[in-house]
Image (tube, rainbow, N blue to C red; front, side, top):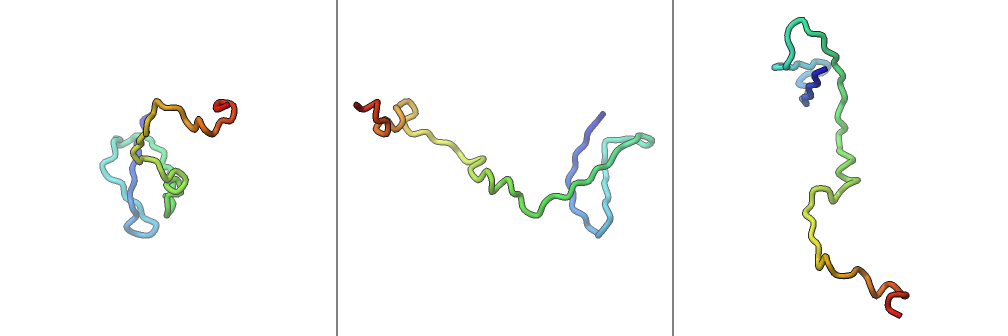
Length: 72
């Protein structure tokens, strides 16, 4: 099974036109249409995704003063 994914914007209500598909005349294909949400909730859920990471002093201990047993 060959899967081909394409995103497009409808130019007219109720009409969808797809061109240059990688299939030949006579082939049987299945068409499934998913409407994209107006806003991408994933961007809000993972707001730091894609931002650069920076580690300050990555080899030093972390919050050593916060551990009561470690300091006494």
